[in-house]
Length: 280
Image (cartoon, rainbow, N blue to C red; front, side, top):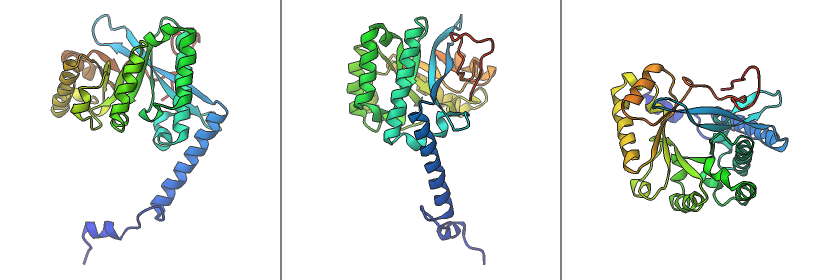
């Protein structure tokens, strides 16, 4: 007699001692080692992706600076391949520090751009991160007016009261905040009323294929309505087709970001180069 599926699953080896657990642990260890080496040797960079205004003349509203590391072969590794492993570690805090420093230096060199940089709520209160911010803002206080800090919804909700206080403090210095991956986490609306986010970035799972997905249309319209109620700019992530962009514009989205408008590149328009280099 065949076993029920639930029984088969129960009989499978679980935990760190299972073959799968061992493989995952080995992969994570290799990732930590690779990122540690990259940070120690400062083999990091930012890749820049444009965020476009949805309304005419559809100019670039700002760029998102996405952290990248180089592996021992020189291959560019995107954050999605290592941040889940390092985010809760000291190494994650160092990555946030390096992203902030590179972002602020890019703003110093290029007065015409506005830039968003990702950070974890776990980096709030990290002394080195704040020293970098203070030091560079002392050199040029106007940098704060062109800096946007992106915090994911799931990260913000780990310490909502601390995030609220942190935002109040830094918005007084001209810095803006964006709630990243909006809709993918579990924002409690009692906290959402207290958050002072200037913008929300609607998670790509609701955006991809939206022009032909009635469920995602309803959900995205609801997210836009919530953001409007609290006077927040709305950005749609992962816009990959003209049809999706047109639908999003028809429901009043403010900005659009995705491969339709440009992949992340380590050679953005303000860096002279005969041919831009794009990285995933």
